[in-house]
Image 1 (spheres, each protein chain N blue to C red):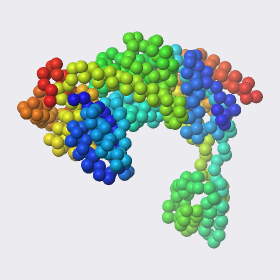
Image 2 (cartoon, each protein chain N blue to C red; image 1 turned 45 degrees about the horizontal axis):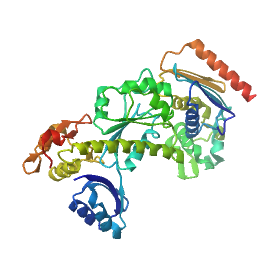
Image 3 (tube, rainbow over the protein chains, first blue to last red; image 1 turned 45 degrees about the vertical axis):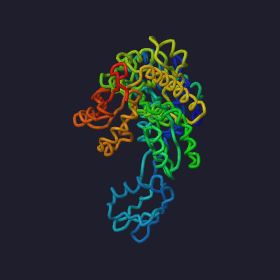
Length: 193
Length: 312
């Protein structure tokens, strides 16, 4: 799959091609292709069992006000000249919450003015959004969409740039799953060396 | 008189004359779609008069096409109305049927997902049985379909077309007793059907549907219905003006051997039974007026000639 350094769908019967396509489309639709580094999907329709293991690229650093636009502080008034609108809404929301709705004005699309309050010195370093916070949530949601429907018994783990997801409609034997997950991670590490 | 399903595509200019002409020839307009300045009429009309309509509409640049699916109501059954099946696979199949003139309904089951845990309840089963045929759009794995599909089949009396990820031969081999039609390579997918291969699979669905519908029409022709469903539709439209206030896209859905009238059963069933078709023949004499499992709608099942000895 484009954008992924490792991608494999392992299946105990015919049908891996279809899941290959499903996984590609879902990751693309959820804008996760640039985030996921490697993904291994294991499917056993007989039991039935669905296991996904993956690595992610180190998450991007938090977005600060200075990433959204230039901050100019003059005469107890701060003007932010917006350069990138992507996080503008999130920034406005944060500023309104911290400084009050009346004190933050947006006279036009690319200008935000803060006045009537004491302007904090470190304004440009205020954090607007931390993408890593919602990342795993989005990722697990996408994997759930990829997984066959009705697999309500789930086990999901994430931490330190890796995640695993196992699902079935029957109870999942912990030792079997742990082994499958560990094996797949070892395989991926080997391939990504 | 055998009525043939056709689609008429044309502009709005002098459309009223075209509609009058169709009606004068003994045809019935089953459904009408207005798309910008274009109008699509789905029509059932006598076979020998189609060329007359073609000649009449030629100066108006109207196009006439035979479309065997006009006048059918088809259920597209999927395991559930979840993001796993929507909007693609299920909607694409339903929409493709619609573009070929059929009235398609999508039916997601409450607990149809999974393999061991898949279930179907009586309401879902009865609803499927109210259609002319049902298309089951299932998943990608043969072993899963093999376990799951037999749970959905009991009690389904309408012809079934089974679609799934495995090849057609695999589906055929593992389905016992056989169903009316199979389409392989069409399981669960998440992308839009845009490529030629995708469209080809949808075409295969249409081919299977046409095969079944034509066989069913032939069966009906051997023992004709006491009244044509299209004629009943026209009668209800004329006699029950309340139908104009129903905002469903098709207030009266025409089926091969009946109709679904989207009026309340308790309030209108008797009125429908009492409608006079011709001379002293009432709707109640030639058809069963039943409560539908879809909301509180009315379902009309027209009886065959052999049962009533009447043809109007």
